[in-house]
Length: 178
Length: 454
Image (cartoon, rainbow over the protein chains, first blue to last red):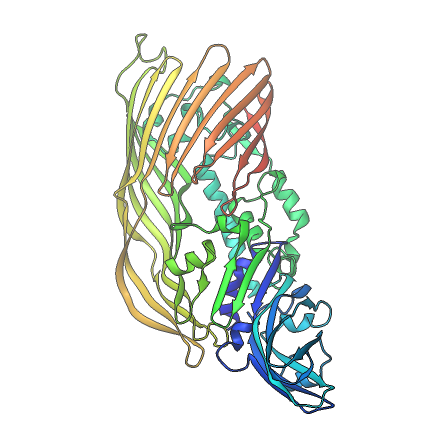
């Protein structure tokens, strides 16, 4: 595997002191699997959360590289609210394994968006993750948990689903393949 | 891994100067100052054109030295920066080092540090951008895309490392030469070329490979040559060199050893592209000689015409040079993903095989004017593209200034200039020339220095 990675990525070394920039299309790992959708049901006068977890494979061989920056450059979700009035926010957690995403601190929290009645509300998910999850992006595999967290201050159930439509993470490395 | 890289690099470093020597014919700073041109009679073109052996050696032919001794300032500088005792830990040869850059290593191999580099061959640096999805992998190499060849690429040369003249009479000469031929060619398959050159996405269940064909062979060749003067100038045989000269040489090649490897190396993607490990692809056939002394015949022919200050020559080398190796081993190396193993299979042993030496063409011309001006040009093709040199020298008493241009194997224009000082039988020459390393479009500049004995 290492030989394969080296062959595939020898061109990275060819850029000498240049940088290796990775645009990781996280959404592509979710699309069509159902993991791009988080159902929410928030009883009156409570807060609740629901999550989706997925594994993202990265090119191997960057273990000795140093990470310059990690940013979500493109991220979009639609809140398809079926009923009730409340607010829904998103948090992203990154870890080296599935269980770790439940213990890691949130790498990014998107402020809550108000929803009311049957409606579709677009939410932008962007932010700078640099310094928080750098080391994870040097590994072959990382896990991402996207959590939808909602509050319901009303008297009726808030229900609906959050559907991710795009999530692109840009990682800039000082490359060192071998 | 480290030892392998160091060993491979050092072997190539040893071979590379031979290639440079062949391309430029010598390590003479005068030659480099004139853009690499070989000036017929006073160059070393006689090694490649047997007709020149019939031309009388005249010392002091417009400032031509008897011997040029290179001053390897570059080698001294290189060994200071890269001590031999620490090569294994040297970032240049150590892939585990953060300072390791394979392009810089390849530049070193293709531009050996015999002479002092004023402007080192640049290792390309730029950002490389990847887009990774579940079923997509796009590599945008940016400016480094220019390094990805469209067609087969490689390096190769046939060198006459030593040409030892023996006794002769009536135009016939016997001698022995040591030949060295190597040729390494690589071709990217269409899918890999699109990925690297056009930033096309790596696709699921697809093959991406490089096909390599590398050959190396060396040996000696006892040679019997004839060269003679067909016509004389108006003043008779001894008054001048004027006339037409013909020459031919028959070589009986005795191969010392050879090896050849051929086949693809690459990988096959799974589904999805990321999430399944690509399977390495390796299915290569390697031929190696079990015994030395392959035999074969080949020949050179040449013609030269000298008229007053003007001369022109044309030589063809290694015509029909096919070596028959009587005892060869053929092995097949394959990678099997099941078990993650590399298998070696003996396909055949003690079987005969044949190899060829590529034909080399050399054409040259020069004119020596009475005013101390010498102008020359040559064209060389040794199977890996045509190289052209044109140069001029002007002498003023003890001073000489020189300049020249050349077109290298990759059709890049290169430039040379320099000068010299001569005091009696001793001279010092300095030549500057540009050259483009194999994996770079930019030019480097090197200063050659040599001592001339007249």
